[in-house]
Length: 307
Figure (cartoon, rainbow, N blue to C red):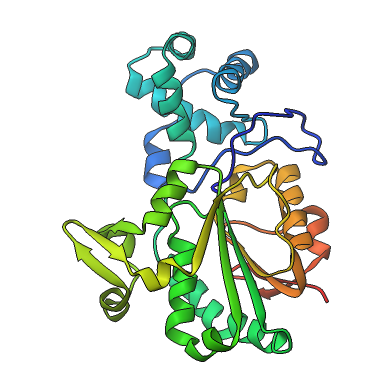
């Protein structure tokens, strides 16, 4: 789930967290072009939070203020407003601007084989260990949380298809990909991508698993059918239990430390003993969750649930 839109519970209580917005990592160039030049007070920021919550059921209380302010500032500039107060009036009057702001807040940036070395470790270390561990019941469960437009779970599917053909025959393997944004989930299920999204795909794999269609590439049905997409909020959604691998990259960095810990503990509960957790390179384990995982690859942020 890129992650979530909240309609209930605005408390900061980690036992009952609010829903999360679908923040994903945005290019650093965007952030640098959008400095915090507008003046925000606790009152104006709260008022914008309240407007968004009232109109869209979208709760920002879990997120870091500076991250939110950058994205609001971007919309203030784009809409031509001169101040935060002017922009608040626009939000109150124009429903379409609320939706544009939500789009800015839930931006999704990812690509196939992003950080190639991470997926090399997945292929060379993580997946072979999982198959060895699950040899008895021959059932493997993978959960991609905050999957955005599907590049990461599809990358896992391509690795399985290319590097583990025998295991695909012998094991019952399921890949579940979740995101709060229904529009982006539908886009992921369609499996159509621009050339830029395939920058990290080797030419042989591109030719094998994608078909060029105008300015885009269509993913093969063999890969698409390996991934099941579901709209779900990581905070409010059900617990996906008995997973052998959980992937959630470049998402938690936008949450407060308390919410990061809550989500990481949820991942721990969802994993089988010995299961793996894969985070983004700018993310680390926090709080009590540090006691629940062993570090497998520190640079690639690959962790393992203690047996």
